[in-house]
Image 1: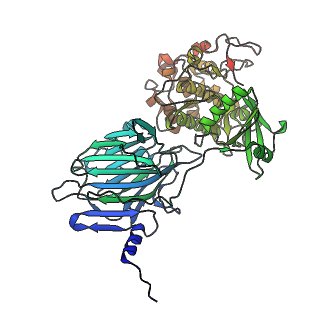
Image 2: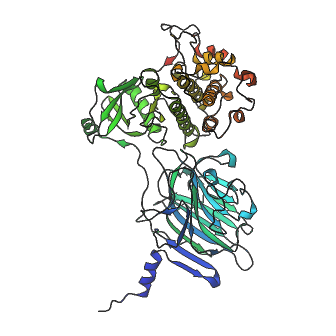
Image 3: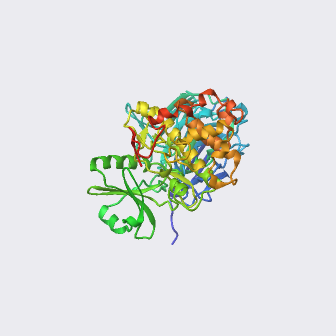
Length: 622
C-alpha cells in the first residue's frame, strides 16, 4: 500500500526543521531554527559550536573566547534604490554564569559583510572588533548587544543592558535590560541563566528600530524596551551575513552563551514564531532549602571534634552528608530575632552570588531556634589559620595568589554583580582556602546590598579591630572604600605574617604604622614575613606593601578602587599608572596625602598604647 502524504504536511515539517526560503525577485529571506544540529544551515566561527542540547554554544565559560554563528547564506538587505529594507528577527538566548566564577561579557545579534573575524577580540569588544578597528566606518557592522559587564572605557550604562552598536562597542543608545508593565519597569537579569527571548524589528520606511525582551513563556510586552530612529543605509551593505557574536574575558569575567532558537525574515512580515515547548534549560538552581528533620539526620559531624571555628553569629562545623560528601555547616543559635536577621542577610547575598573567589552556598534549613547554612567545605581552612596556627608555611607565590583572588572576589561584589555588595567584615579569618589554596571570601552575615546608584545608609558599627576604616567609626556608613581599607590591612597581614593590631608585638602595635616606618627608612622588605627568608618576589612584595599603604589611607577617596587593585596585581596596569605621582617606590615620590599612617591613631581611638587588657569603645567581631 502506498503511503499518501499531503504536500502541505511535508512543507510544514520542513519548516519546523529549519527551512529557508529565499525569493530573489522580491529580496525576501525567511528562516526558522527551533533547534540546531549538524545539518542546520549555520556557520560557526571561532569558539562557537553546536551543543549536545541542540543549542548554539557561542562560548563556554573559559577565558578570552570569541565565538560567532551565522546563517550560512548572505542576505540581501537593500532595495533597488539603495535603502535598507525592513527586517524582523526573534531569538531565545541564555547567558549562564559558572558557579565558581563571575559573569562576562555578553552576546550580540549582528550583521557583517563577511564571516571573517577580521581580528576581533574578546572581553568588552564582544568579538565584534578590536582596539584599532573600534569606531571605524569601514567595519560596516550593525549589532544589538546584550551586555553583562559595566565597562567604563566604552561608556556602558550598567552591567545588565541592551545597546545599539554601529561599527563600535560604544553604543549609540542603551537601556537597562527589562520589561515595561504599563508604567512600571521590571528588571530582567540577562545573566541569570534563564531563557530570554528578544525581538528586533526594523522598518525600512520609517527607519525605526524596535528592541523588546521578555522571559520565555511571558507575553510579549506591548511597550518596546528600546526604540530609536536610525538610518542604516551607510552601515549595512547590499549583502550581509546575519548571526550572533559573544565573548568572555579574563577569569572571573566568563560565562556560557547559548542561542536556543532563532527566526529571521526580511520584508514587511514578522519573523516566524518560535516553538518554545522543547527548549533546553541551563539555569543553575539557587541554594537548596533542606527540610530540617531529613537534613539533620543525614549529617554527621556536630561535635566539638569537628568544630572549624566560631564567630559572633554562630559556630561552623565540618560535616558529612549521607552521600559521603564533605560540607561546612554554620549553626546560628543566638537570640532568635538577631539570628534570623543575620541568617537572611547571608542567604539573600551569598546565596545569589557566584564567583570563584567566594565561598559557595549549598543550602539552608531551620529547626526551631537553630538556623543552619550549608557551604562547600574548604579543606585548607582560613588564611589566619594558615598564617598563625599551622606548621605549613605559605609560600610567597601562594600568598600572592590568595591576595589576588580576594581582590577579584571583592571587585565582583562591588562592581560586577547586579547589586553592589559591601561585605563589612573582610579579615583573615573570613578568607577560606580551597583545595588549590585559592582565597575565597566567606561569612556574609554582615553584608549589605545596594543598587549601584544608591548611597550607603548609616548602620551600626561592627567589625574587627585593625580592619575598620576610620570613616566608618565617625559616620557609621559602610561603602566599597571601607572594604578596601579592610583589604589593605589583609594584604599587609598576609605579606608580613603579622596581625593588623598586635598588643603583644615587640615593636609596632599597629602593623601598617610599623611597615610605613620601615618604608620611610628604606627598609620596606624587612617587613616581609621572616619565615620566607629570601624566597619571595621582591617586586611583588613592594607592590603589595605599597598597595597596602594606599588602601589604608585615612581619606576614603584617596584609596584605590578594587578595580585598580586587580589591574595592578594582575599586571594589566602599573602602580604609577593608577597613582600618577608614584614614579618609583621611594618615599619622596609618594604624594604627601599618602603619609597618613602617622594619623592612624585616629582609627583606634586610645589604642596607641594598647595592652591585651585595654578596653575599646567599638563592637568588634572575633
